[in-house]
Amino acid sequence: MRTVPLTVPLTVPLVAAALLLPAAPGHAAGEWFAPNVETAIDNGLGPGPAPRGSTVADFTSDGRPDIVTITDFTQGDVLLVTGDGDGTFTPAGHLAGTAGTQGLDAGDIDGDGDADVVAMSTNTLKVAYGDGAGHFAAGPSYPLTLGGQVEPRLLDLDGDGDLDVASMTFTAINTLLNNGSGTFAAGPTTQVPGTCALAAISPARLNADNKGDLFAVDGCSGSAFALRGTGTGAFTVTGSLYLSGLVPEDITAIDLNGDGFDDVATIGSFSFTLTTALTNGQGGFTSSVGTTQFGGAGPTSLTAADLDQDGRKDLVVSWLFSGAPGVTVLAGNGTVKLRKVADFPVGAFPQNPMVADYDLDGQPDIVTAGPGSLSFLRNTTP
Image 1 (cartoon, rainbow, N blue to C red):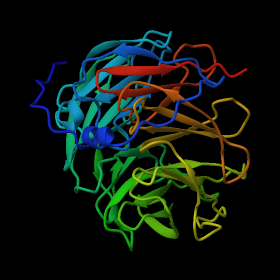
Image 2: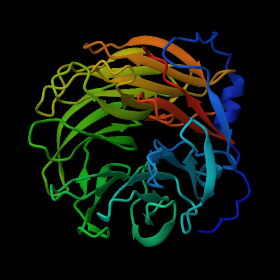
Image 3: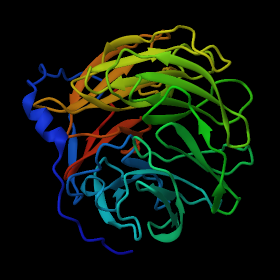
């Protein structure tokens, strides 16, 4: 491993925007999570605005969740931070060959049982093979087309049991198909009609055929799209839904009503909204407009997980525009509209929330990455 020198910092427009906005109301400390604990890390300006600038996996095979996160606002490389098993972390080095990363994902792509990383820049996907001991070997790179945002996602697109890659162009979904040993070949490209700048995608289960499906959201039209996988790496657009949120920033799959099929949740960064909608188990939406509720002051990312372990998925939304940035937790209740639990302050400019059992007590916790630190929220649900 080597350390990639940091480049000259760029101006961060979000900082200026945040300073112009009034502070949000005080954030109530709910019983679901204890106050945040921060670990200092050397990541410069932080992971930046990509839908997934950080992700969690056990890269050291010790049973403790670790994190990889982008440094210096997409102008640096990828930093590995290993979990200590108590909600704190130890920086463990930078991944060689990952300079310029703007979006990433992690999973076992070569079938050896160890977590690997795919790191995408504006035009290239790079592979870093993990050895299960916290070390990475630089693998091949693959050309990809620039999109509205940079986001590679790992999922099995062709049903052969290994992880493939889906990513966005401005108006289409690109794919790379795994050959079974952790290298990829170019797969089909699926155009998404009515889009001009796809902003985020999310793996989903839209019907019962067990082929890899996706949700996608367009930053121009404010519409979400359901894309059913064909099993070949291509998709069929089976549903679209207009969202009222201005400038959709992220999208996630979440089974809201417990029918076994994923519904959708998106956030609007400049309308401060969270919008949800149900699907019909066939890849279509059950309404023409989503259900909108407050999503925090400048929401940037969201994650679905069963936080209170009641069998229903909940949502965690990170937000930026406030004197005390944080995450909002919303509890799933079997309906399209979730119940807000509380706002929980975390470190500055938090990006995508990562849910895992960081302190090994059997309950899912939350970590966010921002400039200079990781923020840990310990789960205290009964």
